[in-house]
Length: 119
Image 1: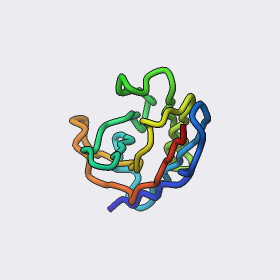
Image 2: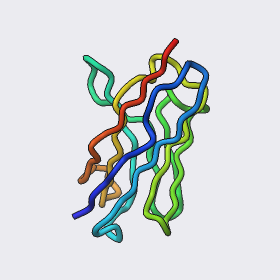
Image 3: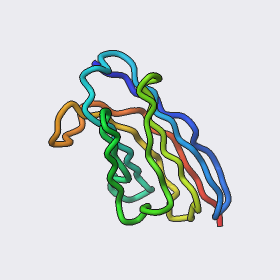
């Protein structure tokens, strides 16, 4: 089992920045990659970004490309999401997730952290 705990959410004005963290514990050696998702009120959960645990290859949704950066610290078993130039439409609960497979089917999820961007 892998446990994921997110932190770093909060309230920020449009144009501001936040950095989310996701700390993994447990059988972290089984992780192939980790991703960030978000769910806004009344909407389905949407992919934001992902990164491979080894190699650090990244992939972003078009809606955040150029504004968000995903990174990882293998020694700390932690993934980060640096969010810049935030917009009100970025308001959502942000979840991190971990996958054990190259097919990116996520096996583990965190509890989520709220990000609110005011206009």
